[in-house]
Length: 316
Image (cartoon, rainbow, N blue to C red; front, side):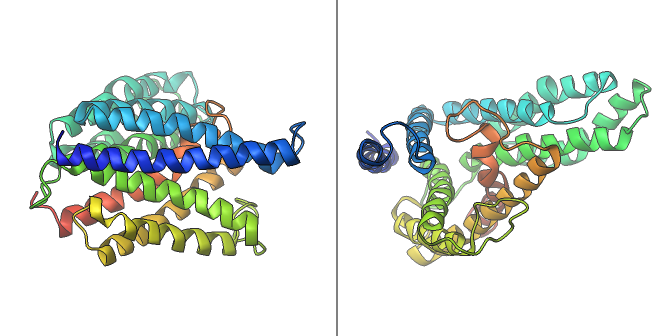
């Protein structure tokens, strides 16, 4: 077994141990404080732990299958997220061709470009070519009612659900001296830090949260929860420097950057949900809402993490 796979198994084993402890704690709390399921906080906690088991298993399987598994996993996640996003938009019959092109042409082609490592094209394909193509396709249908809003919604859906998310598997294409064959661990690092930040902000917020940051967007987010979660996740990232090409200080600073971007991404996605009048993007994952509810932090952090690493550490 190669060194990257050994490190990956170590990481997955550690995460599994944490989830086992969380599952035991959740079971004890439920038996003592919520035997009839009346305690919403404990029930939500247990739903989150169960969902995390599913997500960790899926992510672990994809990581162990290597490049193809990762690209297929995030391609599927983009498809599911795009479906959730488009469901909440005000599309009309005149948008059907543009929406079909987004799902069955632009999305698969973006991931194909990532698969063949064509950075020069996948980095501009959606924000340039797709953005020009979609309004053309929509205009050909001749429906001008709220045309600008409808086109912008589909364009934004592609940016959020496909372009940004595709930067996670794109990390596999970076050529980092002395880190050859270990790029899977970069993806694991990004996902673990961002998702641990979400969990730790939730925990700190429940323990100490008093001051709401943006009550109209996300009533559960507090200053205390954000600060405690961000600092804790930064320490987690620094502690995971062994699986990256970064020093502990560099890993900590990068973790802070992606944690901040993940937090602001969550606020933006909450603003969109409030505008659409919904609590969650979907209901596919118990305790977690839809795919976008789980990807919202990764969406904003992935492109920033990718380009910082590419600029400072990669030869490509």
